[in-house]
Each structure stands twice: as structure tokens, then as C-alpha cells.
Image 1 (cartoon, rainbow, N blue to C red):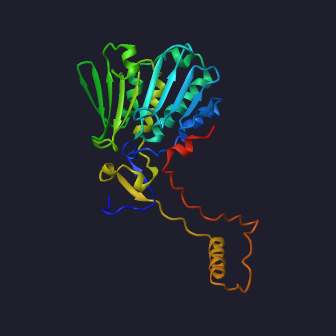
Image 2 (image 1 turned 120 degrees about the vertical axis):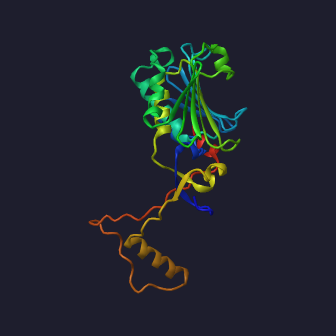
Image 3 (image 1 turned 90 degrees about the vertical axis):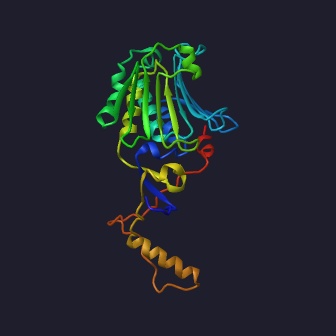
Length: 291
């Protein structure tokens, strides 16, 4: 990466070094589109609930710890969760979106199967990383996967775990991580034993996807920038209509008068004006406060 920073939008790869977009909407929207209810509190925490009250998501920028996302499924709406998935504040938003998109699809197919339905083998969750060439290892009853650059990994424990300890975060069945070591650069995601493996597979598939993602460069975790591949977004080429509008604006700003008025865009040409990429918002609370 160049020694200077690009003060604008950039494409970054691999995904595990990109950091969060700090915007909740992309991950919330798949559930809202499938009939889930969205509410928020006075602190701008957002809560999404399925129509039958069995699946719940919390987007918690003002939560009590660094966990930004919590997703839980309950066979009994008033009982403890059957399973829990968490993503911390540095987790790339695309990973959370992959999980919630798969969850929304599964819920639409069979709402009753989401909390306690059939579970697939762990290999289904590993397969996207295997196919992408991540290094696999085993230690006692633990399966480990490491990204080619060594800056992301998956740990799967094959040991017998206590469900309550998992829900408290004292034990982990699935642990995903990425980024350089450090509070603001490394992220973690966890899945308890009963999380449907197809949801985990959707998340690991997105993690292994080599396609670049869009970020505002200064929001990429600083420790990750030297290891990431970053290239600026090329500015769009102005259309003839853009040129005419710019000329008209300059003439007005200088108190001048155009000899002839620039014609409107032709209905036959339909040439659109170029649109610059939108800079991601810095304050995730604003995007999450919609209800």
C-alpha cells in the first residue's frame, strides 16, 4: 500500500482487514424485508424481532460491552435462547449481513426450524474456507483454519460444552476472528453449538470471498492498512450534461451570463450524470435509530 492515505472511498481486500462500516442498515434490512419488526430505544440501539417472537436481533452501539450484534433464537419466547450468535464492533458488516440474509431465508422457508431444526455437520461450515485454500490444522479435539495471510482464522471445538457457559461467552463452539492484533483492529464472532450450520457456512463463504469491498479509507483500522490491498475508487468520468452544468454554475458564481442556455438532457439519449460513491457514515447510531 502507498505510504500516504487516500482521503476518500477505496476498495479493500481481503475482507477480514476491512473493519466495520459502522452502519447497521445492511444487516438489519434482510430481516425487515421478511416481516421482522424493527424498533429502537432512546440510545439508538436497534432491536429486530420475528413475527412469532422466536428470533431476535440486537444492534447495540450503546451496549454494555464491545459486542455490537447479538442474534438469538428461542423455542420458548420467554425462555433462554436455544442458540446465540455474536459479532463485535470491529466485525466487517458484510459478515453480519451474510448471516442475517441466510437467517431471513431460512425463517421464510420454515420459521419453526430456525430455533431447534435439523443441524448439519460442522464440515459444511468449514467447506468455504477449505475451498478457498485456508490452512487447516487439528489439535486434540479442536479444528483450526487460518487465512493465507495469517490474519484471520476459525476455531471449532469438538469438546462437550455446557450450553449455559456458551450463552454466557465462557466457552465457544465456533470462534471467527480477523485483523491485526489490537483493540481497534481485530474482530471476533462467535456461534454457539445449536446455531444452524448453514448460517455459519454463509458467513464463512462471505469471509473467504476474495472480491474487494468499499470503505472510506480513513475508517479502515489503521493497524490493518499495511497488510491490506487498497486502491482508490476511480472518480467517474463527467458526462456532457455534467460539463454544461459545471459551466453554468461557474458563470453564475462569477456574476457572468451565459450566451445560450445549456439544453436539458435529451429524452432519447437518457445520459445520466455521474454520481460519486457515498462516504460511509461515521456515526453508526444515526443509521440504527430508524424504527
